[in-house]
Every structure is written in structure tokens, then in C-alpha cells.
Amino acid sequence: MLDYRKIITVEPGKRGGKACIRNMRITVNDVLSWLASGMTTNEILEDFDELTQEDMIAVLSYASDRENKIYQIAL
Image (cartoon, one colour):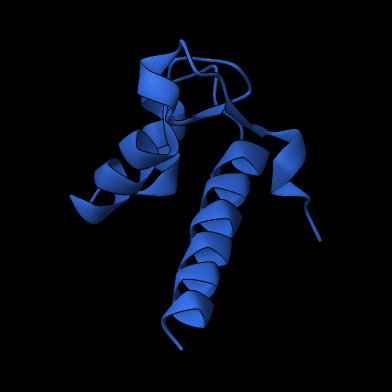
């Protein structure tokens, strides 16, 4: 299983402290928004050649983990 913590980074001075991919300025939210708008993983990877398939998996793993933590807090 991929450890997203090796790919997803948070720096207070970058993109308002949002979770980014490998210290780039592309945020997890950017990728999730593209997916939600109907872009496929392949389309995103074609448009942003600096991203990898592993980055895409890390984004989804990070989002899943956050959702699970929010659910646990709500209980």
C-alpha cells in the first residue's frame, strides 16, 4: 500500500498551507476538483506531465484518510 505521507506535503508558506503534491504548487484539492469535473486520471497526467500515477493514488489515499478521520471525530 502506498504511503501518501511520502508524497503529500504541507508547507505553511505555500498555497496557504494546503496539502500539495511533492512540494509542487499543485494541491490535493486541485486534483480532486479536476476529477470531480469529469477529467480522467489519464487526462490529468497528460496535462500535467510533472504528476505521476503514484501521485494520483496518493491524492485519493490522502482524501480517503481525511474523510475517515472526520467521520471518527463526528462520532
